Length: 536
Image (tube, rainbow, N blue to C red):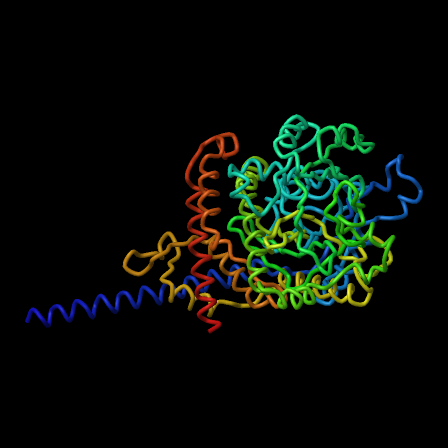
């Protein structure tokens, strides 16, 4: 009799659990379909905004007023990529009056801010980011320029992270000038054999860069005028990996679609930029054409086609070495992820201070990450470009290689970005299978202790839906894996936890941000494990 009663109880409990699971699936499926419907725009419209100059400004020359540099440089590639996806395209510039603009919460589904000027006032303010709909995307992550993009901002981010140079061994120590001129002098005195490279903060194409062996060299330099504008000083890598005797660096393309949780993808192709003349270890006698890889310098000495390799060719070359390309690029990918994790606390502070705690939903950014390798193939990130050139011809700007090859790479890259961001696939079935297999429930009413190991909310479900949609559209990108960098994750959580009160909503320090970050990391880890198993 007792045995029969136990069997009845087990059967009843089992039926109850099965029914609960079925109810959960039904509700989750409804939520997912609603998320997909909400994120699918009724009208596909790309808005390109050039913030580089103000054509209506009295100070603008007639030549300037007829040319918008970034629309001319990048516009054709993006117009082509989105045009193939049946987007209408509109263009604006910073000189237009408010009534002439289409910016705001309606009128566009994808907004591209093109330019180096402060985007808060010339394109879209942080609070306007917060008011964006689920159907809208913007090509800049709020705060990026003052956290990673500018040379001095990257320097400050590295310093604020709180780890020693030995622990941050994927970037060079740096000093911001003129403010840290005395500290630079002390560092130079401690390492008298170490040459230093001085880079003007707001200059490009190798202009104004020089090498110094002592603080006297810096103070006596004819280029000292750049110190008033701001400059960065870093130790020069004296043992770079060389290709046939030539110094080189890598331009890699990284698409960041979320900061919290960190979600980023590495494009499979890139550029290898070589110096024009063979490298010399005698820094006192070496010329810029020997230690700088900027094509604006190199093209004075060689044809552009001789100054670059594709990333594919470089990988083939690496495979002939002892390390091989897989091991080297594993190190490079780890360095990129670590740099983005280093920036996470500053992004959290910016989001709380400027965006009412929003994590910049709908924001993405394509970054040009410049990397150099030493002679043991250890990578160092030189700088981050928040608006890498997408120019399709070799007529002006960044012309790294023969026109056809260069154009083909940029066409593929812009096509892949548009594909990733314009996916609205119905992923309901595979998402439900993932949640069932990993015992994930939806809070607050559809998460039960006896059924689920992890409870997520509707915001998490929206992120999960996007991950599955990106998974279908990933093609030329490789997803990078932040959760593998355990040490940096742990340190990021500690720093987020110690954020000062004034960066939190209502001035309260809570553990919400840390708990949310940890929960999303657990969800992302489960997703990647499931994806790997599914691939096998």
